Length: 247
Picture 1 (tube, rainbow, N blue to C red):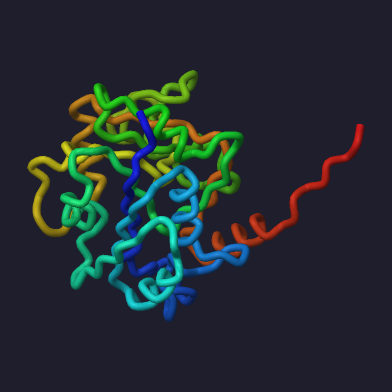
Picture 2 (cartoon, rainbow, N blue to C red):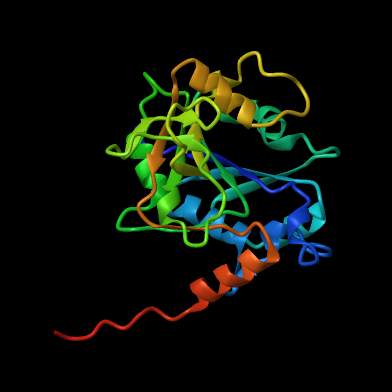
């Protein structure tokens, strides 16, 4: 498929686990190596040709809107939620924006580094609307330094892109972690509840229909769930590139 031209970036959460860093700053605006996490997400979308993005906001939403005023690309619409609609409800409320075309959904506080090809381009290349309603990026548990939790989904070991099975339904241990970036088709929202609901409900719906697929990431993924994680990620991404020695 061609790369989706529209995206939704989730930026409305309270960032509770990141306190005190988020007491006076929304988590997406925390800076990593001199750049906000939100700008990093938007730059990744712009780099693959995304033209229009909705960013939802709630907690300290005026700060998010102010921070985005200077951006030229992609074109951004900030949607303020009077009440947090959660990850599924927030997207569902703006579904008409996407028409009948697949679109990206990103978390504003997810950080990754690419290998040779951008992860978002690899997602677009792997998308097959004849068999998928939702395709999402995963990282192998074994590839995440310091990861102490289990996996989220089981994905066949010898495949880069394959059907995904949620941890509680898998016959084998879940071997991958959901990273955040995904492509979703609007049809998946058919009969979705109005108001607040989790995007995880849509993952389960797609899986039940045999239309949930995962793509293994080829680069690194940086988990920033706590201030300690954030400090370590800042250290890693602020480090100068390793010098190559002549042979």
